[in-house]
Length: 382
Image (cartoon, rainbow, N blue to C red; front, side):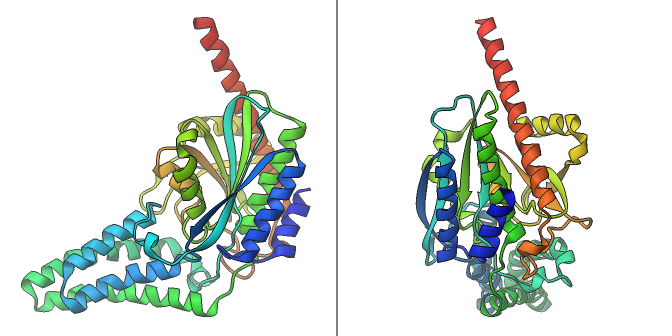
């Protein structure tokens, strides 16, 4: 079952760029699977950017433009907008051209209990030079240097504006580094292709569909399980942002379990995630994961922190929703074949996905047990 889902999404459908026809094809495939399992399924359309590259090319170019114009306020404004978008609060991106995408939301109206939504994104990313085997090991350090330049550039530009002289040339240094980063993104858009996205994230979608099937046949008590498969995660987590803008008020107490890149490496539940800063995952879900990990040590699922790029859990945690992510990392703490042409069906370890399914199903049962205990305790105290 898991293998069939994985093969159909990553091999038959293949590369699934954000807001492309193949992303929609994957959404319709998942809709049909979930409908056949007996879920009520809705396709939720929205519009979003097809890539993050052009947006961040603008962000990275603003400091150099501010230097050329000797106008530091422009750089300050650009950095503020950069950090808002980085942490999934889009402002400038709302003015960029968009295309149609969709989320797939499945729920079971007959079940009752604590609401839990299994999340995975449907789209796959373009490859990029900074994800090449030669450079990806330094991805986090490069990112921190870039963030440092986004902070430093406005500060130096203000000093340059006041005192000029050598300070003006010093202020140019972070601006040039950011301009070089923009050139790498231009290269990404001009020369690179979408990956098959087998690990990122056909693995997560396959696990979500397998869990949906398992819940139907072995329904855990005390939980109401739904599935949310998002579009345009790779271009900026826009599917999740749209879902929260439309339906967030209904899900303040819902638990979100995000499955992303779980097809190779060692599996972890992430107690925190985010690029800058790191947001703490739901304490309720961390505790439940720790309980399952203690009861099922043979699954070898560890606890970690993920700070490489945003996932669909990032907008949830940034807005104080209850969420946690599962990801699998290699020995160097990286996502195997991350945003690279080698992210293919042949390079996925089916056993890792099966472990994720088994662990998350145990997690659902643990959440249900706790919910039933709390419900009975509340009744006894009334």
